[in-house]
Length: 139
Image (tube, rainbow, N blue to C red):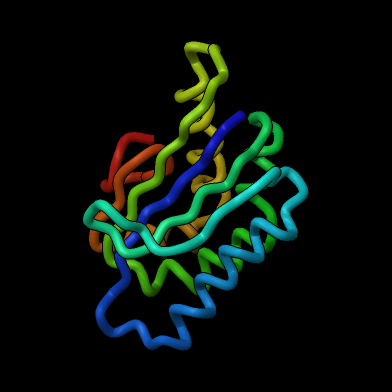
């Protein structure tokens, strides 16, 4: 299993309506993407971030389905413009020593095929973690 997580802090000029639209889009990902086995979206306590989301996915095939699903792309479109700081991470019990590189390759493949997404991500104040492309991290 792969637990894909995101932690983020929003820009101070994000309106309550925009925030709710972005959070609802994250929840919708969990409801409609077939490969998502369970999910949680909510406040992030105990760190420097305001919000977080975790999606449980069975394998790399499901991870790719999650990444390219239109519901996920909608969250990118409505949510990323509101984000200031963002970190992504993956926790897995898969014993493949190359799993981290394989996850990073899926993210890179997605960025390579979607210049608009890459532009949205490049506009973030700070982005680190397993999915960070370009200047924000190693992908």
